[in-house]
Amino acid sequence: MSHASSAVPPDPSPDSPANPPAAPTRRTAMTVLGALVAAGAIGTATAGSILSASSGSDVRSSLSLVAPAAAGGGWDAVARQMQQAQRENSIVNNTQVLNMPGAGGTIALNNFATLSGQSDMLLIGGTGLMAGTIQFDSKTKFTDITPLAVLVEEYDAIVVPANSPYQDLAALVADWTANPGAVPWTGGGSFDQLVVTDLAVKAGLTGADVNYISSDGGGEALAALLNGTAKAAASGLPDTRDQIEAGRLRALALIAKEPIEGLDVPTAIEQGYDVTLSNWRSVSAPAGLEPETVDELVEIVLETVATPEWADAMEKYAWTENVITGDELTAFLADQETRIRALYEEMNA
Image 1 (cartoon, rainbow, N blue to C red):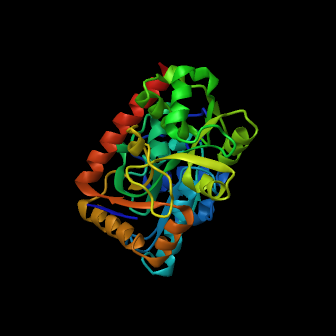
Image 2 (image 1 turned 90 degrees about the vertical axis):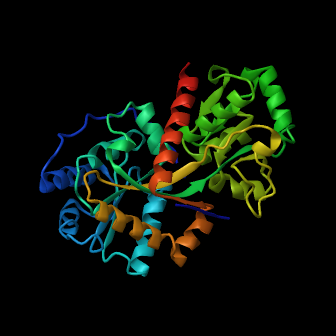
């Protein structure tokens, strides 16, 4: 099912641990997860409360939402807004949020894959997590867990400083293709670099041609633009919209399939560049669940995104709804993995 009306980048940590032993007992699996959270994650639950929260057999009695990054990022925002919506509307009796950062989300993914058959843990993910499995060659893939739904998309914008000579995307691309090294790019994270690489390919360049300056978040990317270190950036719309509206940045293109209402910025597609990679956010369950349990969890997710609280969150974070489930979700994830893998190959060629 798909419905549309109207995503943080992977953690750069190089650590990618080996998978914990397969097929653990329920208490062993939860102890592994709880110990990791207690050791280094920032969350709303302690290791002890994770164990107690996992004791219910009814999927609506308790859920723990695992955000595979530190508090404050995009995955964390999705988890906490789901938590609020479920609490306010009594969708789940007790919803907790756990943060488990590291290695582009793959530390959480590797550990989540040990929880086969458990219905009270859900993992937040998205484009960044899928990219992390490729970037860090993770042993665990999306196919090793049970994706339930894609929820929303977050779009990048191609931006330049307000005093930039580039008034449109065509002018920027003309200079870029004429002398790639003379047009340094930046962005808030690895997802943004994927977008720049995709634009380069569609403009006739290669990944090796891209002069990309890594920045740690949207604030650092903005500083690189304003101090002249970078001439252009791909950055998440939530990170840049205020700066665009304040006149500090000029948006040359929106990386989306369609324009966004209330934002007077043409898409890259409208300007002749078929670049549409979005920062989507997803929710998944462990493997090994009965079909009726999976159906109930999907229903919980759909009830959550139908609440007023979720609608408020979408406006607050500039998310675009794109709910995908079932067979369409399987096809979507396969297509996204192919696209992201090809871009990483291009970047590393």
